[in-house]
Length: 50
Image (tube, rainbow, N blue to C red; front, side, top):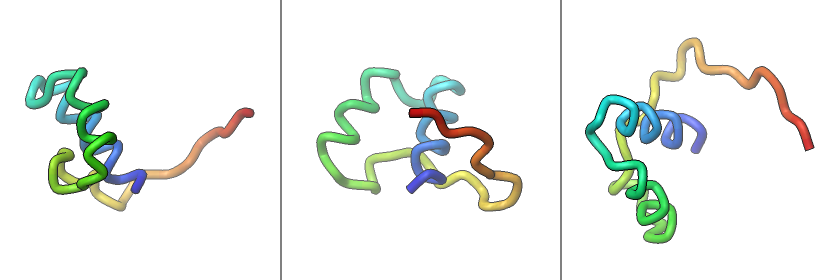
């Protein structure tokens, strides 16, 4: 799921998706509407705060 979210945010950053599309993608609950998955290598959780 994290790879899917990161890939979608990268697509927004590169101008392939409009930032407002993220809300629509999450509401649709359909991963096919999201951006490409980010590669598994080098992706790690650095910090969590509550």
